[in-house]
Length: 410
Image 1 (cartoon, rainbow, N blue to C red):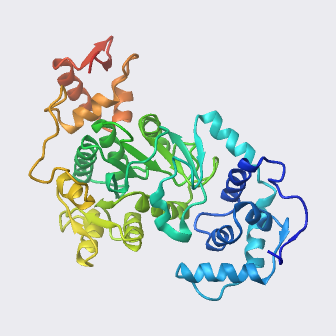
Image 2 (cartoon, helix red, strand yellow):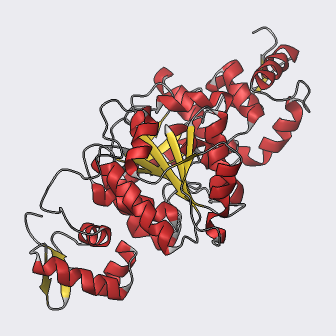
Image 3 (tube, rainbow, N blue to C red):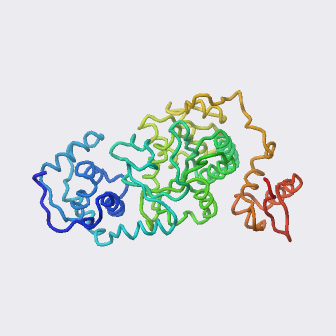
């Protein structure tokens, strides 16, 4: 465009043609916060490489670019007037000196992870439904295989302070969905999120049983109490984020990542949520892009279900009570519905959900103590001891000097 003027050397100028786009997006991910509408519009208008040049002060632009940004903001439902690009440049300026995209990319290589951008094979196409709010990139740690089709992905979300009822329902849902070949998406937090990931891992199945969408960088498994769980998710599924390694999981980033959870799934199920739970924010994102929202009824006396009842009362959510109903909402052709409750018979058939979770937590080669298993499985010490006894009697677990491991061929 004729109204651009170079003021210096673009930070990606020395990179090869194929690498420029990736390096630019990696740099922009650290320069701009998620959902920075002006920044995202700038990338849409100029492309990532030139947008980085403008954002860092290497390129100057004239009124035509601002007009393009205004049009994109209006198209996305924003105002027709905004403070202008100079205000955004001042907002980004303090971070320019900290940009080191090659370092961030090297961190991902060291972790065995991937950096993916739109157009890559791993890029989830359903994120395009976010429009202008589609993320610039994803930092991916886990199995390197594409997500299943949208109708095969379900989000299970809810409160961090879940009750035993919420934990049980979430575990049953996640396990049943994974058994049927669905991918369960959640946020890696305590409470409902953790139960969703554990249940899905126990359900196993081919492909990606579960995906954790993080609010901070994937170099750090947060919260620390879920570190072992998230490592298991990264081993069997995937842990992803739109913010670069080293980014702190701040409160507003939790809210921003909720749109990714909603966009990745065909159905968002709010299992248990208080009146102002962040899970409702995920539900609203899902509604805004035409996704199905479902929720689970609870006791009218439970504050932990007040948000679920609010969704039902406001008319935007469908009531669900079993896995078949969720599968039906997802619209997957040929999936069993509520008349077909059981999975295929296997050596694990008849185990309770707690025993399945405990079995999944047992190591195959080394042994693990009861104390360690309580952390990994998220069960009480009494439940772990009782479960180990049952698994031992069934020949699924073995004990060595007071520690336990999974029996062979299980």
